[in-house]
Length: 240
Image (tube, rainbow, N blue to C red; front, side, top):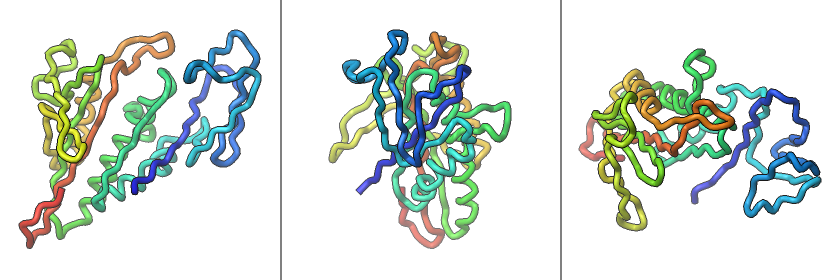
């Protein structure tokens, strides 16, 4: 049975805010009795001037590095993926809370690489150790914008043209409740350099726009997927 783990990462703020307390894996949030404090939640039903305890698998404070987040969140998932299990890392949060930085990172410094970049590096480093297997890595990059799916790695996609000409992807129901993505291209990545290049290409093709809290906000949902095909050198059996 799949195990779902939840993590919180706190983003540093320009103004000092002391409305929370971290106690191991419990985040206590204090909702002040202030008309200027906007409460976001289902039906706006959070009471003001009250404290709420939220339980997570782990909590990363404002001082946590990209490496610490990767080691705590993604490393086990990547290792299990290399051993034949499906794994998913899902970033969720309000606009401007740091999702893009956590997943994609910052190209200005090596230490600020995001989860996706670090995951690719780990995958290829581990695959180099498996000399008894023939392993192929394929990548796809899907974007969902205004309820329409697009292929960000389609050969015709260019970051300098509008999103409309990009290849559309159709989602249909498959056997046993699965989903089939028609029109989504798969790209063979023979080495890490090619994989990182494809990741950057897809990121550049994403739809972005300015919001009140983020000058370059991702205005869409994106799914970056890594596929493995494994075959032992003395066998014709192909495992996906």
